[in-house]
Image 1 (cartoon, rainbow, N blue to C red):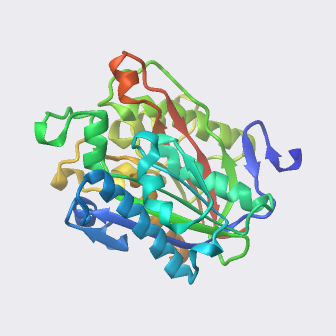
Image 2: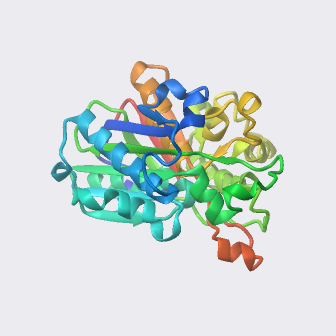
Length: 338
């Protein structure tokens, strides 16, 4: 079992699974952003034709999985497993959205790192010979997240400059044992890192130490650095968190360079759309990966990237009780070569 381990925390997959299909869905703000052209579908209706925002989030997951299946020419019975999660209590966005497909289901909670977590587990399941095809997916919705974690939307609460905008979006990647790529080649599982940040409106600062920890572990285990990759992209650190990670590496004498990006800084035009520190939510990194990133990899813009979605492992209860906000970050190497 140890031959797939590289260093202390990184896994080098012996048979890297291939991305065979991907799809994403977004709301109106996502469609109006710089990456709007990379969405398979956007909807001006925040309810997505449903009666509640929670049902809308489930509808997004249902639609995005069906799109990914259709694009690969697959039926639900062709998938061995789904790995999915979201931000809602008991992950009901996933369980209710996917219940009609009849596919074996692993429900996950990694907060906004869930796209990385689901990709990692799906890839390891295939590499280990336990599956031939798996779906990895997640979602978030601005209105459901605001209601659960902050204030009800009609309340109209003021947002500080460090606050981020939860993306109304969903993304799905289908992996298979065989395919033309891109391939999942390496995985570093994140640790829970808690530096005592308690401000629920400053998620970037809470998650930045975890991003630094996981990326540093990946570089250390593989003997590589940021310049060995065409793109190193975190999930939703936003303006502040992204700058903190760059500073952490600078103290180690490592320049992250211009290829160090963040999905939360790409999804919206923060000046024109007034999104404060940037985007957040599971759907942020999921929609950017399953639109912009994988599309441009297949077009040849990048051949080798590190995808490092970040998550804040809090709940409304923990925040009300004065707990700090632990962070986590999973690193997934995606390459056009096995």
